[in-house]
Length: 334
Ligand SMILES: *Cc1c(COP(=O)(O)O)cnc(C)c1O
Image 1: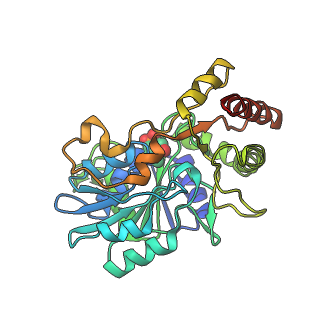
Image 2 (image 1 turned 30 degrees about the horizontal axis):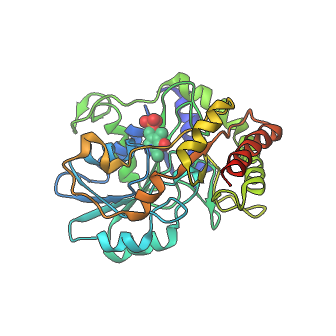
Image 3 (image 1 turned 120 degrees about the horizontal axis):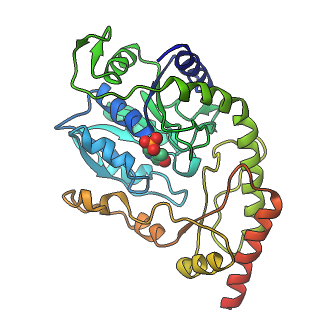
């Protein structure tokens, strides 16, 4: 936690339009500690989406809070209508996940939170650099968690994460929580483990930052190309008009009939795809004690989503190759 960490924190805070950034050891730590700093714990209910990496749910449950689930919409993000129905007198926070790098429909979510006086803590792990009504990912709720692991768009060279917030009280508590709950590095006020951001990761991420905008632009161009090639064949993510940055395409995720056969066919052609993630969070073995949520849209999507290759090192011709093979698969089905 030397000068590189401080420089990185300043840079990420500024990029998100926030007053403070607190570097931590991972995105999981970022979300867990943000929730704890905000006072989430036993007796609190927290509403989130069923469709995310399991880190989201584990972070909520590990605070001692009870997780509840709203359904998602066609954009794979929280559905504000089903969200409103899940609110109870015990609800203390909403954790929207900007899945695949696409920002949630934040206006109605924030309106619900205001109406019921509950917190919004964003899981912005996949969405660094996205903007909605000119507000950047991480700029909406009381606090937002970023993952900066090597798979993410702004990547360290190992595990890393960060919380951003405008709230000075939250900042102070997070600074303590990331280092065993200590104030002035010696007096332990809270029960917590070590979740410091490594100086080396911060230095490397400062370098990654210089390439971030170019990387995102490249991703958007590849995604656009996929959408042009695949529209009418599979359900594609909503394309973005020029200048629209409401997604940074952490993933190019399609919704496809015969998904598993398509996946096998593409694998035979040497094209790797992924299902992110094949098990809905509430269906994971570690969470069987949670009540079964009513989430028909998520249950449909989990059988049909498929992530096609999309990363900074791909060229337009690579996208064409994948798209041609997807086309060929559905031609053969007719
Ligand atoms: C990656 C990720 C996390 C966890 O981040 P780590 O740095 O791997 O701990 C949390 N939520 C989402 C949505 C993620 O994609």
